[in-house]
Length: 84
Image 1 (cartoon, rainbow, N blue to C red):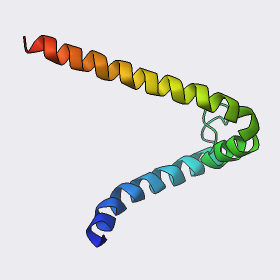
Image 2: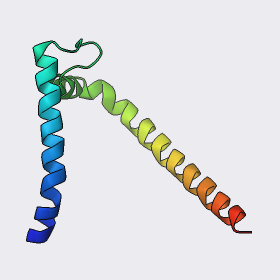
Image 3: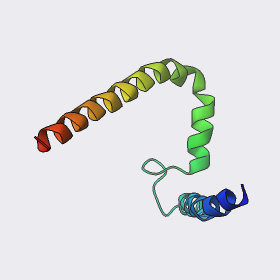
């Protein structure tokens, strides 16, 4: 378990630093909030609008799974065709 934690720490640190930099740039006004809002603003909007977004979540999930299945099938077919 300790080895797994050590392996996961650097990528997690990179993600946290990237989020902190994004937040700092957004709060400093370096980027227009309409184009790139702060991560905390995104999280707050997701939480506040969860009732509206929940209905579309199922449709989106089904479309993602269908797209992945289609890509898997096409990729497998192309792999077989390349080796014929």
